[in-house]
Amino acid sequence: EDQVTQSPEALRLQEGESSSLNCSYTVSGLRGLFWYRQDPGKGPEFLFTLYSAGEEKEKERLKATLTKKESFLHITAPKPEDSATYLCATIRGDYKLSFGAGTTVTVRA
Amino acid sequence: GAVVSQHPSRVICKSGTSVKIECRSLDFQATTMFWYRQFPKQSLMLMATSNEGSKATYEQGVEKDKFLINHASLTLSTLTVTSAHPEDSSFYICSARPGTVNTDTQYFGPGTRLTVL
Image (tube, each protein chain N blue to C red):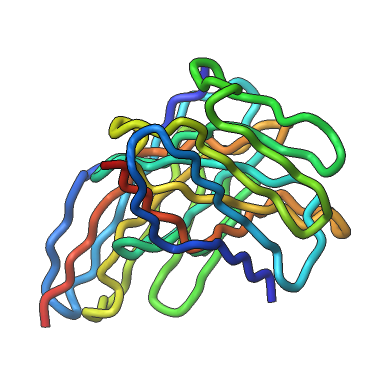
């Protein structure tokens, strides 16, 4: 069974203080890894899909990277509007997603 | 593009009643839709997968007679919680995978908060 573990559970940052979130996984035959952002009381918002070790994707202040065992989401110079829960998920051949528990990021002005 | 809507956004019902939640893909056709539930401060747990025109497949431990799923068209799937009880109170979220392009990406709806009294 796929296992997806995210750390830390919570992260409190000062505005402008860069940091990284970790997503480690144990899957049989990884097809892909997703990052989503979820605001309280809302559905997840798609950020990135990564397929191969060494792949990187960027969007504004966010950059996602992938290795054979883990993925990182780097937040550069965060702003208060980057406060959210960030979820990673692995995908199988039947398109089913297995989610980690998420990292809740709070950015203080 | 890739917008998914859910209706209602919030519902409160009495124990023993049934509640229907709609999930629509607004600007794309979705051959596959997924239903998740999320408890407070926990991640999303997949309940079932629905493919247009066929029966839904349920994850282990999910009662198919309690959570009825219908995927009648390429843009609409419904989840009916039958004889709801307080323990069914949760945040229900659907997602849809575009069927006309080769993509793994699932787009999520805004969720439905169900409270059973």
